[in-house]
Each structure stands twice: as C-alpha cells, then as structure tokens.
Image (cartoon, rainbow, N blue to C red; front, side, top):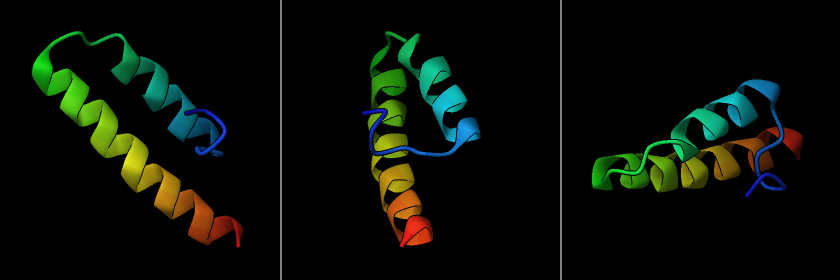
Length: 45
C-alpha cells in the first residue's frame, strides 16, 4: 500500500490506521488508501 501513497503525512496516517483492528478501523483504512491513492496519483501527474 505504501507505493500508492507518496506524501509523508499520508504515510504517517496509514501507519496509525493500520494499528486499529476493529471493523470500523479496517473500513477507515481501506477508505483512506483508496482516496489517498487517487489523490496522490493526480497530484504527482
């Protein structure tokens, strides 16, 4: 997942979200990965 998220703050948030083991935490993690990947792809283009 880290190859899709490029920003420093995005990687820090990814690490925080990975520590949550609840269902809501996992949903937030995947939602963040999808949005951050799209956002970083557009910004880097």
